[in-house]
Image (cartoon, rainbow, N blue to C red; front, side, top):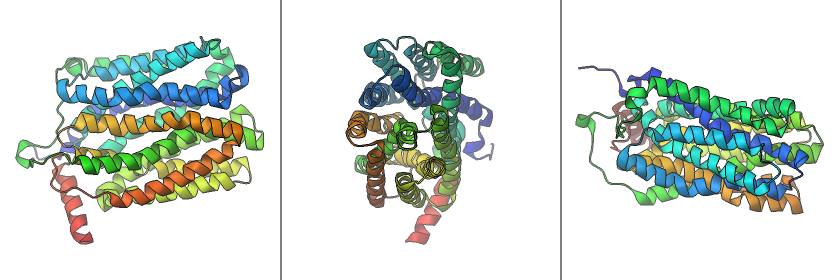
Length: 411
């Protein structure tokens, strides 16, 4: 019998899946990167472009838990590939139909639904391949950060060369990495089920779902969501409005944000496995609030870029820990937990983005970041309600042992 820890079970498969995560979340970043071009070339208002963010997240917020339920019930591993292709197709069409705001809204909404369809099935597969540790989940999660970070440069290159109508070229990452993933995972792509539990049967402990704890985690994640979507939507527009910089310069902050987030995600997963998930969550929210205040008070666009990097790293520090916490709270509904954690909570920020856009139109974009800072302080406070859950089958034996030792030390 192999004595290898579960999280080393299929590292090649985990890396391949991580690549598809980069491609999928590339389209989330592409939405934010396209917004300044919609403002400058299509003359959309701030409220209108915030409405496009809403399009990318509104239906997704409803669909994601449903996709999570379907993943729990039927497996549907193929849903990650179908979602990736839909996400790419929607963004590819957005610049082509730019003369019709309604058409842009619809195709961006289709892209958002595709992103929603991808996450539950892919997260369950990542959990299976990586053994359920925060470290392996951070590796999968960082693929999303990389994709979002690459999007601004790709959008500027494509739109700067071909205009908004050249957005059709943005479908290439979905087609290429979707094909690679299909080739690597062909045998399992249409498998009826995906193993939701990487822990051997002998190590399992029967434990019920804790919906109350999961509800509090969702409340914390709601503040994270507004901070993430608000920053992605308005950080470039903030630099343009306040410091009158070019679109290209303003996009630097938009690229730095998820790139720093990738560092924060990897560091957070490593730290959570060693020092406890709740410590990492609380530290991340506190540092994120301080970083947002630095953006509000920044005296120059260079300081905005530095503060945005700090915000990206600190905001994503608790990301993997929050995912594994959700799995520990709902060990019998991993797909649902993933769907809400990665989808519904992210989408909540999109639901309030039109309100943030109206505030930016009436007051200033700077006001948006004051609100974001206040919400992150609230998230920090709410995180003290969260509790670590012991003896869950959602963790590998190695992670559970580390967590139990930490809790004993805290007690």
